[in-house]
Length: 57
Ligand code: FES
Image (cartoon, rainbow, N blue to C red):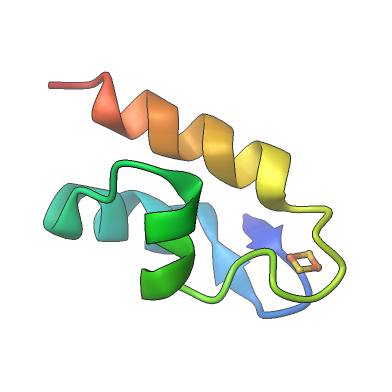
């Protein structure tokens, strides 16, 4: 499903990016994938996915 509609970024893209590059904050994630840089509505869900992936190990 799309998390960020503005930039067409899916949850799968966010999960694979987190697994691969291990960003430690939403700020670091934003450097890797274009989430939250327009309307900002996706930030909360993107953060939840980031935390979920980081806690997975
Ligand atoms: Fe992500 Fe708008 S939905 S910036």
